[in-house]
View 1 (tube, rainbow, N blue to C red):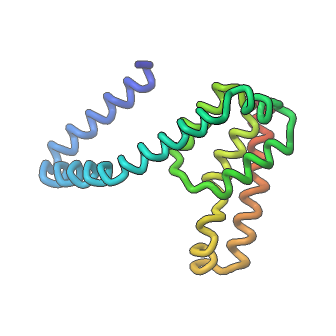
View 2 (tube, rainbow, N blue to C red; view 1 turned 90 degrees about the horizontal axis):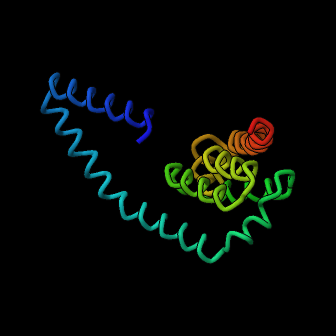
View 3 (tube, one colour; view 1 turned 90 degrees about the vertical axis):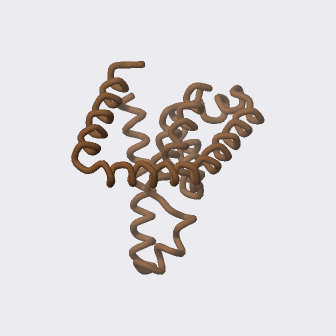
Length: 160
């Protein structure tokens, strides 16, 4: 375990002890509620991780590296960004997927484009957003988010 993780564990335990001392009833209730939420999410998380494993099994690393290994490919970056736009998976599952893609040879630029559009652009949630905020706002927000996601990915390629 690295120092950063150890510090977070210690801080978490200290805050838990502080919370228990301040109001034991509320703290135990919050722990019970969060464990119940985690039980409901566990099946979905396992299913998504299983799906990621299957995808990485059927797509050999050589194929991924051949398609997405070129750092200068704007087309690859846009394809990954489009996939991120239409994908609806939790970010805490997307980050391990991104790490797996990078470890098999994918360039950092398309992976950043995927992650950024995954969190910033919502094609799947478009109807709900349109209903709540209006068509014009939704189109402008998603368009600007897509453009800035590409810019962020390209900047990360320069930085890293």
